Length: 207
Picture 1 (cartoon, rainbow, N blue to C red):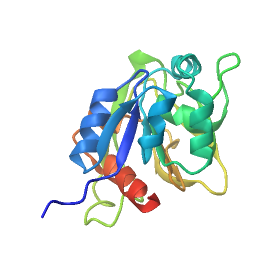
Picture 2 (cartoon, rainbow, N blue to C red; picture 1 turned 180 degrees about the vertical axis):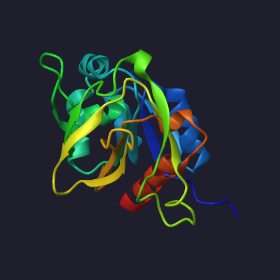
Picture 3 (cartoon, helix red, strand yellow; picture 1 turned 135 degrees about the vertical axis):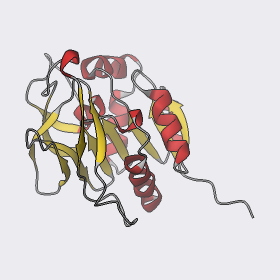
Picture 4 (cartoon, rainbow, N blue to C red; picture 1 turned 120 degrees about the horizontal axis):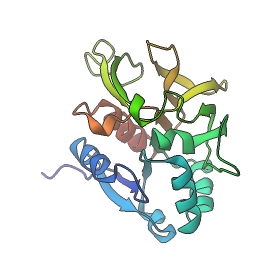
C-alpha cells in the first residue's frame, strides 16, 4: 500500500539556498515545490524562506507582488520556517534594518541583521537544541550549525519558545512561535535533517 503523500511545502524561490531546502524537505517526507508568484501560494501547506540577503529578499518580494500575500498568509496561520535571512523576514522587529526595510513578520521577536559579522566571519559550531521531537537522541545529540552573515535574536515576546542558543555568545539562534520556526543558521547545508523534520511535523499538525 502506497504511503500517504506528505504535505506540500513551498520554498520561496526568489533567492538563496532553494535547491538545498528542496532536497532536505523531500528527504523527510515533504512534497517541496518552488514558489515565486502569488498565484502559486494557494497550493501549499507550509512555506520555507531560505537564507540569502534580507534586503534583497524584501525588494524582490515587493517586485514579485509577494510581500502582502505572504504577510496575510503567515498572519492567518500558514506554517513557515525561515533560515538566516528567512529568520529576519519572520521577525516583527529589526534593530538595524535598511532604510524602509519591511518583513513578513509573524514571530514576536527583535532580530539584529549580520549580528555575527560579515561573510568573512562565517563559522560552524555544535549547538544544543530543544524541541526537535520525540525521537530518541534528539535532545542529547548536538546539531552542527553553519552560520553565514548570521543574525541573532535580541528579544522575544512571551509566546516565543527559545529552541537554541549559541554557546559562544549566549545569543538566541533558534525560536518557535506556534506554526512558525526560525533559525539563524543554515540547516539545509548539513546532512542533519532534524530541523526540516520538525518543520514537516509542524505542517502536518497544522493541516
